[in-house]
Length: 231
Image (tube, rainbow, N blue to C red):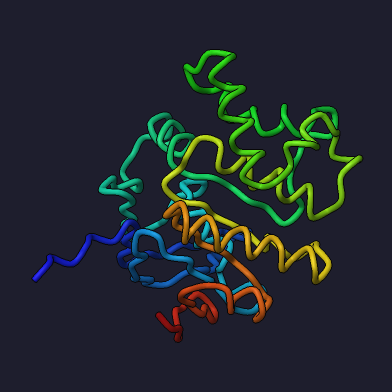
């Protein structure tokens, strides 16, 4: 009988609070769960439930007060800031609600940005960018600026940018929140393809039950606590 695979993400006893004046406001309390390699996880819950905070902790953008996060065998909660930044650049791809594209750069240049932090040659960067844009079916739009693209096309550029370094995990914060229904469905289908064909692990924060239906599993946060979920 085969040994069960280690989870790619292991969250243990995670807590996070913020200080507001003299008041300490708890955001997450004693969160523990695993995410398997190649899983598509939806994090749901009302505004203020801690979804985005949890996503940022897993992505190494924020630091927990207590607890541990281990990703791909690396305990990121103990990494010094400089090492964490290097780890994050190599292992995490980010997809945002409002795309976060730079207006004065073309689609090609926006996708190339994460590669400028690597040791790749110009030719190698061009090959990686061309492959990422081909994956999201935007090869014919690589010289267009964000203002010349629809919302759905801009989000596909953002996904290509997230994928171009071949990261272990993709974190998506309301990736369909600013899109019409048709464009949202296209983005969710693309994300599903990244999981099923390329083995990517996706963690998605969403308010949208239809978006969550695309996920393999769901975790629900309520006032900083995991209350239920499936998968």
